[in-house]
Length: 265
Image 1 (tube, rainbow, N blue to C red):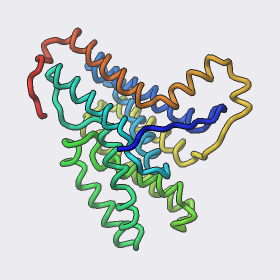
Image 2: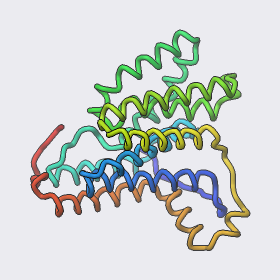
Image 3: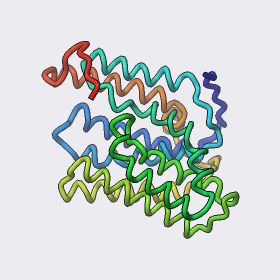
């Protein structure tokens, strides 16, 4: 395992803004899961967070899995065990590690020819149900990472914009369909969810690596710092707020928990 070394520019970047959106919608999602379980609209909005995280995993050039990812993941596992919460599916940090480890393999195989690509997509589609019980979002996460990889390496793989756009649309449809099955949203929340996911996919398809000198200068300093914090301390935010929300949920709904009770599912 390698140390987590971060070097960030002083200016605001497109990564900062995109990750801030992911952080906000992630917190909204977890408010619905832990604090307001009877209000599904929180979860509907929160569905737009996962595509951003996994897109960025595939879009990144690094495939390293630093020790802080494992540490953060096991902190969440330990917190769930203490609260008597289910241990599977493994939290999103393990999903990130799995996708980082597998994404190049999937892309090397699937981009070999059209038949391999179609077979890979179909396999990932069919494996969603078994894998989603093992790690959060299952193979849906790999599909979004593939979208990020394809956009980043468009020139290398030789795909035209319209083909990559078609893939984004396909992944969006698959993701929305599965989320609809899992959550059984009422019609109004389904449209909220579908609209949020489609918006997320639009932002991702148009994502570019940029720094924003003008925004850095024009935005109030505290706003810039908040955006940088959300964009550059995502792992710490994730671990802290999940543990905090789990504690609040344990206080609000003690009947749902049992201290130090082993629950696999």
